[in-house]
Image 1: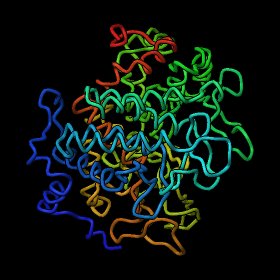
Image 2 (image 1 turned 90 degrees about the horizontal axis):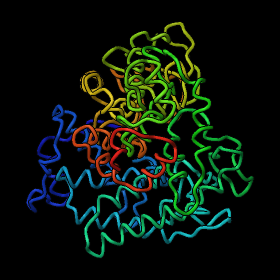
Image 3 (image 1 turned 30 degrees about the horizontal axis):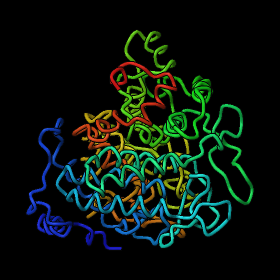
Image 4 (image 1 turned 60 degrees about the vertical axis):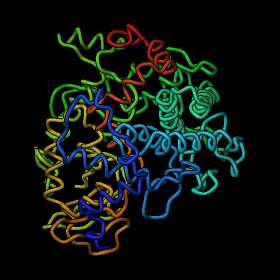
Length: 481
């Protein structure tokens, strides 16, 4: 694959912007009143290119954002929720018009509301308000035998509820968006998935029943529990949150830096934060940690420390992987070259295909730009240099649509087949796909840093606010919510 074909000149980018809707000519631009933090021009460009991927690959009539592209793919329900969150970003940045975003959002919500639900193993998109993790790209029905997913449904609903907050106009289309969004949320039977006492299961299969694993360790699952507790129609009790926090001692510790709740793959410190502004609000655990540490501590600070820990792990580089440094780092769930072992410089190395990578956890030398850019608000002072360094040192990773999903500087040659991507001379292994769930956080979290856009609207979202209060959060912006 000739990666030079992906590179756009400035003129081509301008043409792409015109093709996206002629927004500049229509007088659409960034609302200066919300611009709070200036970013490096390269960060702005990354956000825009990544947005254009999301816009270009998502079907306008259905909103079924693909799991990956350009490899032919099913749709990822979580990626749909990310995409719904991205459309208002595009409006505020002047990349699309409000009318374009409104129409696509309404199409998506109508499509998902009318998709068939039921206990059947095929021909449906979900059951009891939940959706399957992956849906067929054309029909929106369950793909193969994947699971009915509580977290992917929650990530979809996060985007759905943000759309309802953003499209606040009195016209018929924006009114319908709000009505459908609340209906989609109200239909989810969260109490049905409390299979074991005070725990929510990760999913269900019509062939075999509920998945034995629960949301019961610190990770991205906060959004699942908050939505479940905030439900008007099928709520679960505060005991769910108390049980969730009861095992935090397994995760707490000074791993590669200051003590924090550890979860290796960095997406676990990002996903819930895309919609929930955890700055200054605290549950019982965070209030206790604030007292213990003698300084304010919340889930945002926890993610800041986890971000610094990612960089420190790369500096220490216990695995001796190529390229790791204070400037180049970032481990999360992402594509990899394949599942095989190969001897490199006299040392046997094990590599993985798609896998959840973290500091000391399935680390095979594969780095993912989304691990860095998707954490932008937590530590922009170390993230901006990292993004710029990756672009400068590994230019084949940066393309027309921003960063390809992952790269591995250690794997510079391969003795056998690769599952994904290819070897690029002077770089190493580089993925050949973009992944929807990795692109979305880049767009959303850069914008949360720049303008507080998603957080600002979601601080007034009644369902999320209700869930936070049931969980015992107080302080900060919640005092006036």
